[in-house]
Image 1 (spheres, rainbow, N blue to C red):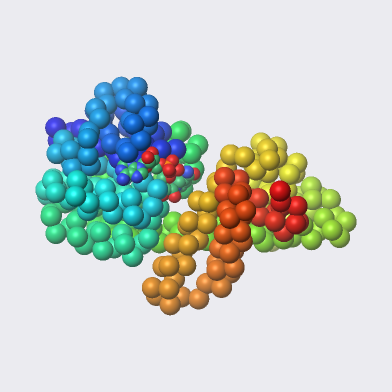
Image 2 (image 1 turned 90 degrees about the horizontal axis):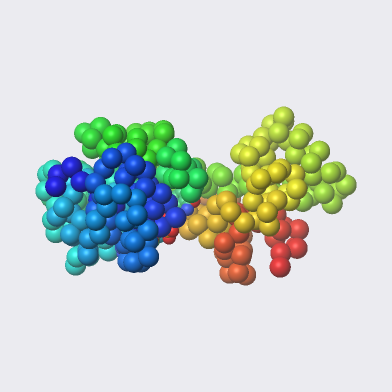
Length: 299
Ligand code: NAD
């Protein structure tokens, strides 16, 4: 029983992570509130379904969770059928969900009282990274917990970075994503203005790519349709990183900033743009859709 691996949350990301863990030869015990996701995971090999998170903890010492947001993590860890009721000093819990770092810190303290080890290990790399086991894991937690988690994290990802104590993985994730959202917005503003001033977005983009404004949103995910092939902007903003998820991560950054009274004025503005994108029904579009808003051409 001790060498089975539990995985809870089998969505876009967790489903692929489960497949990679099964492919690495692990016997899995899975749980999700959506039965279709459990059935899909069972096709991956030696995979058993559990009825509750608590049942997963009864059967496995190492457990990965990949859930939408803070309330779901709270329910799975601390709810009436949660993991907490079965934990021992042999358990290692890995939460890869992107959630509120303040909650993560208190969860870590609560779990540690049982003797179990816990790390926050949110990821970057998106659905393709999960699929190809090339995720970057940003890990917060003690060194013994980090060391113990290496083996299983390497079966799902490529870069495993120890950021520091509990919740520093979550901090790294939301800080990266707020910089990404602001960069994307700035590139979209530049391309929109340039277009109106008569410079071809392809020419302006190639200049930016070899100039000081170069960033991931110019080199890898240009938001102007047709400038790059194979990116969401050239596919009606389908695929990519959904605006609704970016809105969530910016909201987490704002909550976290409040807790330490940090000034993040640009994050606050960009968060409002993503609220508008989501509230006008474009939440599924890649976050480069901000360009259509700036152009005033969104549907
Ligand atoms: P998702 O919504 O596709 O999957 C979440 C899964 O959790 C679903 O299968 C859902 O049924 C399940 N679930 C919800 N509540 C549950 C509960 N109480 N018990 C058990 N299962 C429950 O989300 P996702 O895209 O896989 O993202 C998961 C996390 O990873 C999020 O925090 C997200 O911000 C983060 N993330 C996502 C991406 C991405 O590109 N999708 C990239 C990096 C990080």
